[in-house]
Length: 482
Image (cartoon, rainbow, N blue to C red; front, side):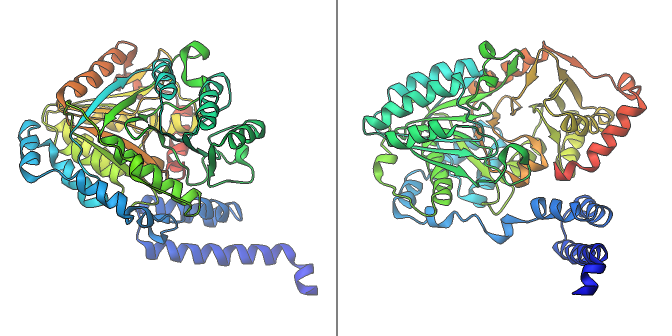
C-alpha cells in the first residue's frame, strides 16, 4: 500500500494502459471496420483515461450483447396475429414489383431482416415544416378517442411543447390511455410538468436516463425516433421534434424539415415499434390488446414499410435499405440530409451510381448546428464532386430533412441521418414508400430546396483555406465517434 501511495500516478497510468491494451485486443477480435478500429486504438493509446471513457461510451456493441431485446414484444400473441393479418400474398408483391420497376427488392430485404411487413392500405401526407405538422397534430390529438402514444428524441416544455402537453393532460383526465417516451439527453421537461403529467394519468418514461443529461450531448445510445400514434389509426413519423426550434413562427433561423402523417395499416407497424421501446423503458410493464390495432376502412393503396434500426435490431436496416435503393437506381437519386458522415459502403454506392450515368444530387446545410459535424461533412464533399455527384448547400436557413427519392417510384422520409450514429448507434425509424404520387411530392420538396441552395463547384471547393482542410481532416478522424 505504501508503494501504491508513493507511486499513485504511475500505478494509475499502468492500470490505464493495461485496460487500453485489453480493449485493443478485444477490438481486433471483433473484426469491425478498420478505420473505426484504428481510431479507437489511437484514442486508447494516445489519450490516457480519456480514451477509456470514449471506448466505454461508444465502443460497446449493443447489437451483439442484446441489451435491448424486442422478442418479448414480438412474441406476444396479439402482435403475432396483427403481423399475420398484414401479410400480403405473393401475387400482390409481384404486381407491386412490376409497377415499381424492380425497386421492390427492398421489400424482401427488410422483411427478412426484421419482419417489417409491407403494408398496402395507407394514405400518406407529406409535411414540409414544423408549423404545418403542429397544426395537423393538435387537431388529431384533440379528436383522439382511445389512446395516444408518443416517442420523441426532443420534447421541450416551451410554448410548442405546452400546447401538446395541455391536450395530453386533458385526454388522460378524460380516461384515454396516454403513454409518453422522451429521450433523457434530447428532451427537457421540467419536474413540474412531469408531475402534472403523472397526476393527470399520463404514463411517462425517460429513455436511458443519464446523470448529467445537459452535458452528455450525444455520448450514449439515444432514442432518436419521432413517433406519434393516435387511436392506432393515425401516425406521425419524420424529422420534426416538439420544440419551438422546429417552428418558423417561433424560431429566428428558418428551419426546413420533412415529416409524414400516415393513416392506415402502416400505423400498426409504428405501434409495434413503439411497444418494443415501451417494453424496454418500463421493464416489461406492457399490456397490449386489440384496441391498439383497430380495423381500418380505407380505399387508398400506398405500399409502405416501416424500417427501424438500432441496438435492438440484428442488422443496420436503414443503412442497408438506402444502399439497396442507391444500387438499384436507373435514372436519378435525390438525397437530403443535415449530417453526411457515411460509411464506405454508402460513399462507394453513390460514386458507382454517378459514374454509371445516374443523376445523383445531394442537399446539405451550408451552415450546420454543429461545427464538428459541419467540418466532418465537408471532408467528404471533394470526393463526391470528383466522382460526379452534384452537391448543393442550403443557405436559406438550416435544413434538417432526411429524405431520399429514387426514379420517381421510391421515397424515404424518417429520422435517420446519413451518418454512422444513425446507421449503427441510435434508435431510428424511416418510412419507405413505394408510390409515384408520394415520391413526386418528396421530389417537388427537393426541387424547391434546390432553389434555396447553391451548387458546390469542384475547383472553387479545392481553393478553401488550409485551416478549413485541417479542421475537416481532424473532424473526419473523429467521425466514427461522432
